[in-house]
Image 1 (cartoon, rainbow, N blue to C red):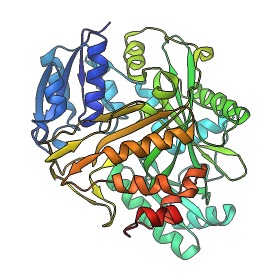
Image 2: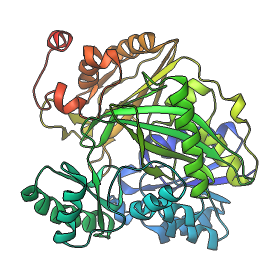
Image 3: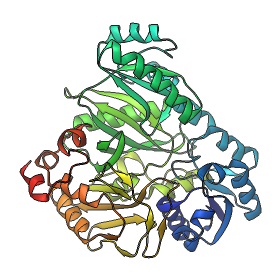
Image 4: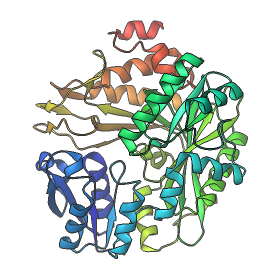
Amino acid sequence: MFSKILIANRGEVAVRIIRACREMGIHSVVVFSKADRDSLAVRMADEAICIGQSSAAESYLNIPAIISAAEIADVEAIHPGYGFLAENAHFAEICDSCQIKFIGPKPESIRLAGDKSVARQEMIKAGVPVIPGSKGIIATQEEALKAAKKFGYPVAIKASAGGGGKGIKVAHNDGKLISAFLTAQAEAEAAFGNREVYIEKYLKQPRHIEVQIIADKKGNIIHLGERDCSVQRRHQKLIEESPAPGIDAKLRKRLGDTAIRAAKAFKYENAGTIEFLLDEDGEFYFMEMNTRLQVEHPVTEMVTGLDIVKEQISIAWGEKLSVSQDDIKIKGHAMECRINAEDPDNQFIPSPGKITEWIMPGGPNIRVDSHGFAGYSIPPYYDSMIAKIIAHGKDRHECIAILQRALKETVVSPIKTTVTLHERILNRPKFRQGGVATNFVDVHMIPGKVESVEKAKAG
């Protein structure tokens, strides 16, 4: 097994990987920016190396600095976590060229899955259902109008190199289409350095269902069941759960089998996620593949008992999967709330600053993944997530009750957080009934408006 691994990330995911390394007897090296000098990851790692200034471009996206740190520390492998360089094929190639194992898929798999238009065509070849849409890139306004006429409004204009909900625009008529098309191109260029877009039929009230897969280098591949990630705001997930409510055994098997077929088409190795949209008629369609560890991986770990990060590390070393498909049994129900340093009652404006009081929940069936602590100053340069609270119960009803209890125990002061938003969501009858669509927050939570728990219970 590896003796030393560098973690090319920050925050709670860096802490998560450090913990896995420690349990496996692996020496951990974490890189950090000047803004993260006093972070929990720096305190916990066996070694820590500063790689640049506070901005991500000068630190966590600085490939030469990260590779230099890896060579100085004499590591054997790099774990990219998620975000930053986790799905950067060029970074994976550089790791390989420097004889450093990249703990993730092969560069060609990252590249193939990362181009959404190309990935879509690969899925069609593999017999994986896709949303009706353009066969390739839409380059002109005329092509966009022609495609919209063919599929019917509403349509979604998506960045070919997109991800994380960025580079997506929805149009409901010809007039809106042109402006959405141009805006999507501009945003794609700014976010990904690639202005190519394609068009798909827009599903009005879909559910976001994803399947966790793991594949080793010996051709073995399994799925770990599905997660429902439909509770979102602006395509950013807020609550994730497993198993997905309302999914019967037959549909679950179809989802799992299809996810494995998709992963094979990408010639995939290591942990990844196949994401689908499920419509009101029970039909599902491939959306994208995330070629990395997911933020919401803990809910799958809670219901399967499998440590996904340890599996990632073992697979990168060359070991086969520690379990087979028959070993995977879904036990109970798990749900995760992402706690962001944002003010949900004031247009979700960021709330960086120093935390003076920090109380995280505990007790039976609660897991907290976080990098926060009393005295920690949340920097304004990165993603606003400061914690994930994960609950596990014998069923969905008990799981929600445990999570509600946990949220009430949580204190982060004076920072504004999304804890209150999660409390309101969990109280909504629509949510408690299960099977909410991706527009749930926009329709039912009235973003920006202060709501009491009593109002939430009534609605």
